[in-house]
Image 1: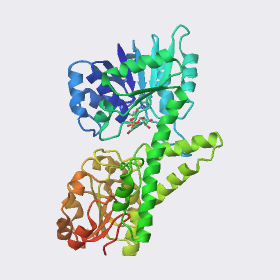
Image 2: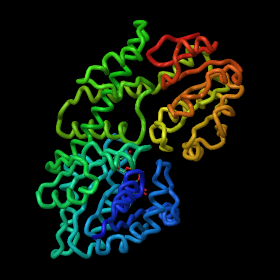
Image 3: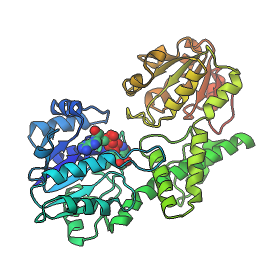
Length: 434
Ligand code: NAD
């Protein structure tokens, strides 16, 4: 049996490598030649813990291969897994051009019956359209079924999430095809939920919208805490201890980023427009998040008046720890604003600096470590809670900075400890120490 995976990004690569790991024969196809060259040499173009090692093992045992030859990828494939990007278009809707490209490639090269599994996050109704498109473009005697199998892995723990998924959702309008895909996943021994196609497509958007809602909600409560003199740490703990609420996703901060929540909430909003449904909560979630992302900047402006010529250090660039993904990262928005103010900026991230330099070039100083970034700074912004950053010794700020002022977007430190260390400390939803 042969599996072809289209797209070797965070989702496609993890999927392909994990399928090879459990014993399947996998060919990964991508249109980016350099990516395929890198992968074929056993090097991982993204930062994902444990992935490179597993990739090399499966390249060596011959179960995994990479190609940018569409014909070779498609030849004799029994299953096609589509994991191409579905980024945000200017109007907020999902851009399906990469999906269309992948479908055209498959239609051109299909040589036997196959099952096409769409892992990419796509608007409700897309699977049906893909099926119609394929039908119209492949030889009559071939049969292709289309199955929705949305992905829930988190960057930074992609392999773990694949092997320990809370659930695997398989949406198929024909039971037999759904069962065939379910059998593929049996070796993972995880709960499988079989649904119709449209429900599976919506589950993905609903899950992300719910998680984004939880984040925006706790951020609103944090802002209230600042007005009312309460502490968001205690408040979040107190509400999270209620099992109906749960303690996860209650860390107040500077808003959600990444390649999924921002685009998926907006794409869902766009979808609701198409059926004339006014999804009020979702609109507020998006609005709250965009305001929250600007919070630290305005707090700094309030304290400094002008940031012109100030030396500022930004610690953490990725949208969350354990990844190098900077898409929609709050740090990117902050840096753009600081550059507008003509601040003098140094940045440090354990994994993501290489992704930021093509965007901001020489307008930033890319430090090798946190010490080098904060040396001589007038202010530090903490934007990503990498362990290395949360565990960074408070005393070093005092030692290395021109004046020790921290704007902490991830509430890494205890307020009392920052105060005791003689540091001006502004965080989210907690008492500010000036
Ligand atoms: P990505 O941008 O990291 O990777 C997409 C890959 O697809 C790129 O390597 C690109 O070159 C390739 N590609 C584009 N057109 C192609 C084509 N015609 N044929 C073959 N390859 C092609 O994207 P990602 O983060 O892996 O996300 C993929 C999908 O999965 C998206 O729909 C996303 O919303 C969804 N998703 C992502 C995550 C995540 O954490 N990143 C989690 C769950 C779901």
